Amino acid sequence: MRVAVVDLPAYTPPYDRSLCGALARAGADVTLLTSRFAHGEVPSADGYQVREAFYRRSATAAGRARRGLRAAEHLASLATLRREVARFDLVHYQWLTFPGLDAWLLPPARPRVLTPHGWLRAEGDAARGAAGFRRLARKMDLVVALSEWGARRLRDDLGVDPRRVAVVPHGAFDYLTRLRDEAPLPPSLAAVERPVVLCFGLIRPYKGIELLIQAFRHVHDAELWVVGRPLGTAIEPLRRLADPIGERVRLEPRFVAEREVPAFFRRADLVVLPHRDAEQSGVLFTALAFGKAIVATDVGGFGEVAAAGAARTVPAGDVAALGATINALLADSVARQGLEERARAAASGPYSWDAVARRTLSLYRSLLDGRRG
Image (cartoon, rainbow, N blue to C red; front, side):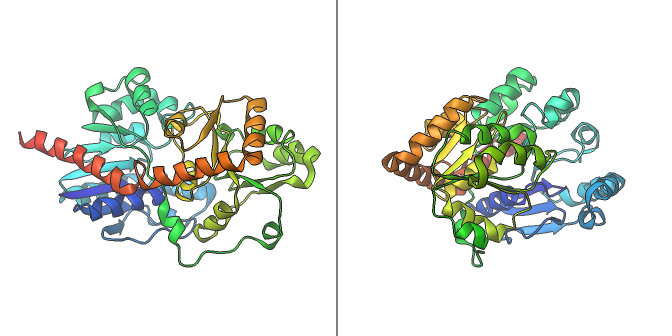
């Protein structure tokens, strides 16, 4: 089976490459069609091919210049995509740069699958351009949600035909636990002796980080580390909000290279996701891979991970419940250890990439068999 996995703008290299590697291990002939990732290193290709044939100029630009160049290169990139996919049996789209427009321009024929990463939350692409998303979904043979919550949203809110909706969960980013050149923590953080609560990843408005800082006013004898690159979020208001707590809140508002990631997760006693909105989160599946105790708000598919015993959830926006749950777990090492054990079991079981690949290939075979029939 010759499969093209398509992420033209290289939005999610860890997901793309983990999926491609797992599909290749399961026997598929896989090529990742993408562009150069501008922000740092990416996982190396293991058993599959990579073609970085798109957005060649904009991949090396920055900020608004990158967005403008990408728009200018878009039609040429889609023309290249049409040539590239001609030799594959099936095409699985992970990200499309202009979903509403691309619905008209995608290469025809062949089974087409779409996984709408991040599009299903309230501020996602599907919500901003529902008509364009519906048009795109109609062009797909299958739309794959990362959670049962996402599948319901596709069917009930966005009008996708239930016969063309499936669920394949996100996989745990276990490759991060095996990096050969892990970087140590910055010295100022390595010297910390108190328990550490980690909030990691892009700092964006829907992630509710200000709610976590408010909750931390009621957490004692622990530090909160907020680590990640701001995107659409001003840092100074977060600093002012953290001022009453003093040095127990440390903001690291920067891009974190892949080789730095393990040290932050290994040091964390708890990983917290205080989101207002989400379908799923790569940070959640990084925490699972490192066997961390997780506290998350009950949004999107987070509750499905909690139902497996691998996380605790609190109501979204409930600052008091968030602070109380953090306090309770910091004080109860047995409860934390139970969450850690179940996180590791989930990461090696239903949320392993090999399990993800088996479910994905089963969907591919059904589509191809249907075409042959």
